Length: 125
Image 1 (cartoon, rainbow, N blue to C red):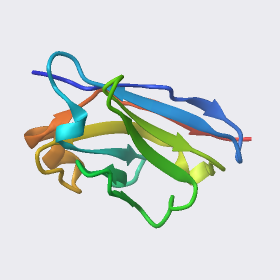
Image 2: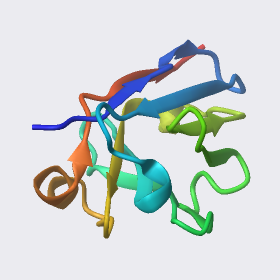
Image 3: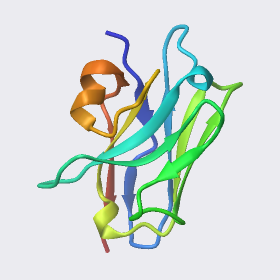
Image 4: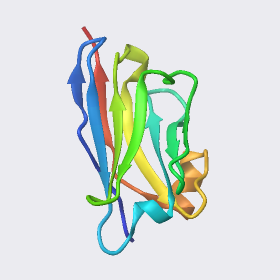
């Protein structure tokens, strides 16, 4: 199946920043779909943290609002997630999702939309 590819994860101290990227192979174009980022933390439910629509409207989970920023580069056909002021609770595997109608549920996105292998983010002192 067609999969998205996430990258840019790493290990940072609290207060640090990372920029995650999401790319799609083939002829899939992010600008004609909804796209978003999800986080799977150890021992916690997978949750959506950000979304960007076709018209560039964005949505953020309350826990990351003001610190994270999702964006799309049409020329590069890439989705980004800029994460600032990272906190330990932000740690986890970050997954990119995209489709005609994005779900807020990770498993539903895995079944119905494009999904990737994830990129790991660790936040510790």
